[in-house]
Length: 176
Length: 449
Image 1 (cartoon, each protein chain N blue to C red):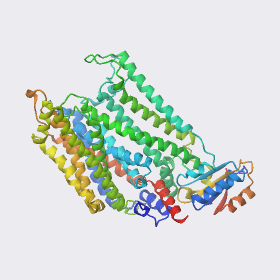
Image 2 (cartoon, helix red, strand yellow):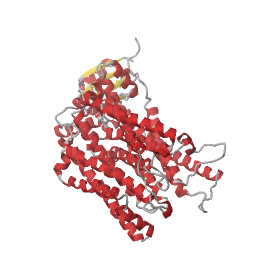
Image 3 (spheres, chains in turn cyan, blue):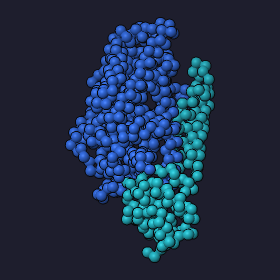
Image 4 (tube, one colour):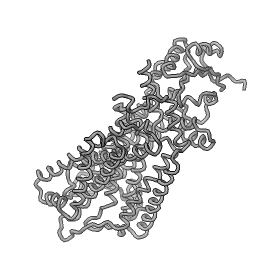
C-alpha cells in the first residue's frame, strides 16, 4: 500500500466553518477540492467552482425527446390506421396533446434520473473516503473538506497544517 | 411562522438523524406494527381471493350491468388516484414554494402516493373483463394491423397513469437516496448495512453530488406539479368527453383535481396523526403541522364545494332537459343518499376546522379527515352512478347495487395499499432526514450567528 494517498480529509463542526475553510483553500491555491455534507450546502458552489448546467439541459432534451416520440407514435398510428369517426379529423392535435404532455414529463424525468447517476458516477459502493475513520459522520452532523492528493500544491504535512489552521477539528490522511 | 413551531429547535441535527434512522434500525413500535400488518395482510388476502374469483368467473360477479357498466372499478380508481395526488403536491409544489413545514410530511406522503397509484391503476385492468389483453392498449405492430385509438380518453388514461407511477417512483427514490445513506452509516448490524448500502447506491454526500442532485430534484418537482394536474384532468375527461348528462361539462377537470387534492390531504392528515402517535414523532410532526394540514384541508374542501355550486349553476344555465333531470335525480332520486352524504361528510363536518382547537387536536382532525375520505368516496359513487342509471333510453333504466365481490375487491385494495405502506415505514426512513437537518441547521445558524 505504498500508493499515493487519496487526499486529506478535514472535519468541521458546521457548514459555515466548512464554507470558510473551502474559500480559504481556494484562496490558498488549492483546486482539487471536494466537500462532504449531510445536506446540500448551496454556498459551496463558488469555492468548488460548480457551474455545470449539463443536467438541466439533459432534462430539456429528454422532454423534447418524449414530446417528439409521442407525436410520432400518434401521427404514425393515425396514418397507418386511419379511423373515420363521424368525420372527425384524422390528425387531431388537440387529442394528441395529453399523451404528448405525459411523455414529455416521463422522458424528462427519466433523462434527469439516469443523467444524475451518470454524472455523479453512482452506483459505486466503494470509495476511498469511506475508509476514513470518522467519515460515517458526514451523513449525520459533521462537515468534511477534502483536498485531494493530485492537487499540484498538495503536501501531506503542509496541507494538513493548513487545514488545522482553517479550523478543522480532525484531519486525516485517506489512503487511495 | 416561528421555527420552533415546526422544528425541534432544542435538538441537534445529529439527534434528528439518530431519531429518524432509529425507526427502521431499532423499530420502536413492533407490536402495534404487527397488529396493523396482520389486519392489512388479511385485507390483501381478501383482495387476492376476489381477483381469483373475478378472473375465473368474469366481471359478472360485480353488480355492473347496462346501463351502469362502470361502477366500483372506475369509482374507486378515481378515488385512489385522487388520494395519491396530495403526496406529489405536498412534496413538489411545497418544495418549490420553499414551505419548510413540508419536510416533516413529504416522505410518507410520497410513499402514500406510490401505493395509492398502484391501487388505482389495478382497477381498470380488473375491469377489462379479459385483463390478459391489457397489452392491446399499447401501440405495437400487431399481426392483424390494428392500432389503439389515440382520440379516446381511455387510451390517454394508460399513458397518464403509467407516467404518473414512473415519475412518482423516480422522484421518491431520488429524494430517498441521501437518507438511505444516512441509515447505512448509522446501521450497526451487517444485514442493515448491506441493505442500506446497496439501496443508497454508495451515496457519499459529496458537495458536487448534492449540487447535481438539487438540480435534478428541483426540475423533477417543477414538472411533477403540472403532471398531477394533467393526470387528474385526463381522468375527468373519461367522463367529460362522453355525452352523458351530468358528465359532459368543462367544469370537470378543475373539479376533479381539487377534489383529488382534498381527499389526498385528508389521507395525509390521517397518516401523519397515526405515525406521530406510533413513533412518538411529536417533536417533528408538531401541532403546528396538524394546524396547517387542517387549514389546507379546509381550503381545498371549500374549493371543492365551489365545484358543487358551480355544477348546479352550469346545469341550470344550460337549461338542457337531460342535465336538469340528472340534477334532480342526484338530489332526490334513488341515490340521493350519495349526494347528500357527500355534501354532509365533505363539507358540513369540515366546517369544524374553522375552529383552531379542532385543527390542533389529533383526534378531532383524524375524525374530520376520515369523514372527508368517506365523503369523497360517496362523491365519486354519486358522479358515476347517478349519471348512468337513468340514461337517455327509458327502457334501459336500471339500478346498480354493489355485490359482495364489489365490496370485497374494494376492501381488498385497502390491504393492497396498507401492506406495502407498512413495509415501507418499517424499512425506510419515513421522514426526510436531510431536509429536516438542513432547515434545523439554518435555523440554528440564524439564531447564533
